[in-house]
Image 1 (cartoon, rainbow, N blue to C red):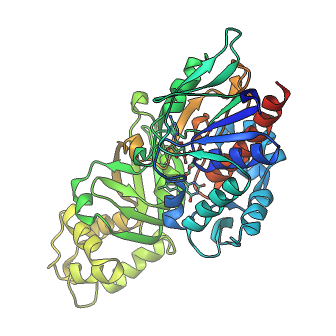
Image 2: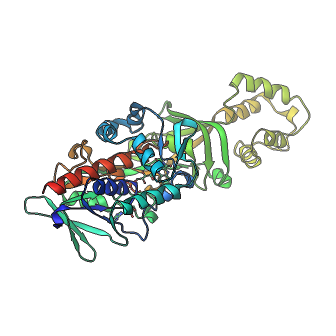
Image 3: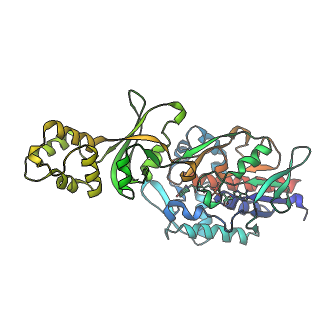
Length: 418
Ligand SMILES: Cc1cc2nc3c(=O)[nH]c(=O)nc-3n(C[C@H](O)[C@H](O)[C@H](O)COP(=O)(O)OP(=O)(O)OC[C@H]3O[C@@H](n4cnc5c(N)ncnc54)[C@H](O)[C@@H]3O)c2cc1C
């Protein structure tokens, strides 16, 4: 077979795996290049090792989850969507289940099962996998058409190339932004990258002492500007880290933290008792502060001990203070902290610690029906290397699967027609 018919896929993450499976199923000879020693390294970490594969939400909800750039995905989602990837996994012996918020996981709760199934399907479909093979640059013909890929050792000729190298987050998994340089080499614009779905850094130093503490059923509100306006509100689970806060609701809120260049002030308010109104909670405090007991032990009954102790310290109160000596002003301070503990935002954790990368290959230069470059014929993009990022819930992986599948299929048609 002539090399012109070969499709080379760069990157064996979820996007690259789906691209290689669809290109092989479309009849092309496929080579999958992976710079690391293993395929799908990030995929194996997803969903805390459980892999939130996709979501039961409508296509419209999916599009909304990606913000203003979401509309680009109509083309890919209309060709390959949730049912397709779930059917593929089911055929490979990985049944799935839906949980709260429509999040879909493998029934086994194992991300390894998902990664292994996709790997097996790629090999079964005849994909030639080359591990420890890092693409360095594109081979472009005089007419600007893609002719192959240069590796650090040797070259591979191809009739079409799919760049599925991921973003910049979790570089230990192999995603170090190589695809941006490949895109730029072909004349593409790469919109500035920044962390999305990232832990939030907090100015208050006492927060570090709570590192590892998880809170369930709290409400977090992000207040931005002066006077402050509510930019986001989420209810659910969060986690303290040594430099700030993380966990599902914080990652979702992080998308609304203003860029440092905006100079806007941002404060995260934690409602530790969201099920009770402020008035109700105040009446409860008045009632209970009339009883014998001390402030510290009382607060320890309301919340995790470490948080109660940190709260007393941060408010400048004395935990040994008898409840019935607490003044009305002090009660109001405690009430304010329980219903809206202010944590001053210092910014977002670095991109390496983010779950996804915002920014990437500019969407206006990619055909949404085929994922083919509008700059270089025969060049395709899939997954996080594109300027796409969504909130948590399985949306990011579905975008990688859908764009991967579409890119692989169209790359095969292109290569076979050359
Ligand atoms: C901790 C964590 C948990 C997550 N959990 C979820 C979740 O539950 N649900 C969800 O929807 N999303 C989740 N995400 C996001 C999701 O994992 C990514 O959006 C998705 O993996 C992107 O897929 P991709 O194939 O585009 O890129 P990646 O998964 O980043 O894969 C890119 C691949 O390309 C390879 N590569 C890079 N450069 C080269 C090169 N020059 N030559 C050859 N190979 C190269 C890399 O080694 C890598 O294997 C999570 C992310 C993280 C970090």
